[in-house]
Length: 315
Image (cartoon, rainbow, N blue to C red):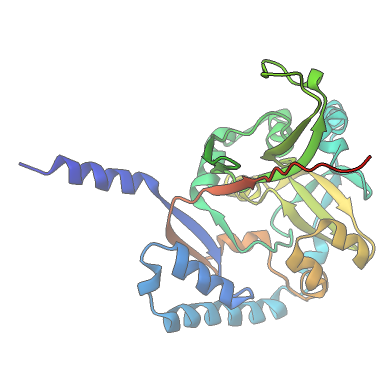
């Protein structure tokens, strides 16, 4: 008789297996090697020399693109939003996601060309891209496309919360946008359905959740860099959609870039905003650059720890 337990175990592992799409040839090489070694299934058994050779070939290909596609990022299209979508844009601007996040730099909504967006993130999860493709469908209405790119509702992601100690909690989610927000001081009347054994003087909340999940780009001179929404941008491009509604933030100097951009971008802005041919979104679909790696299902975990001390002090 077949071992049903073994079959079930194989099924479970198959269901948890995922694939990550990597854009080879982009520095730093060590990040790619570390990812393969620690997160790819049987990655520690793969030849580092072969991995470096594949990466080098892609890196050489980028040098060829610097000649054949020099200046391509400076020709990205950025169109005005259709006036029919103004009401949706106003709704987004009135939301707390917008008001509490995009309150520093000049921002606007626009239809941007996807292929020529500069990118800094070298990999995306294939199953997330496929899930988003199925969710949107091949021929969305302008309104459906706007809501997909600039959603205001709760993300479709389960969260597992576990108490792992008297003063420790863990939060787990499949979403890469899962994050710690901030500590907040709350008044007793801000909390419902809580019954204490005594009167409450104040409440400290440690807030965990998601960021404003808007498709966001940074504009510097003639270039647009994809800042947030990599999986949705890849899903749109895979569906054949060439332009998408985005929130555009404009930076005019390095200090402003430090306020918004990812760390690797702020550390090396010339690579993304001045190089003849930086990495672009369309590179995720170029077979000479793209590599699909099998990985285990990855979760993002946030651990919250707190400490309580009591003292007697003179008034």
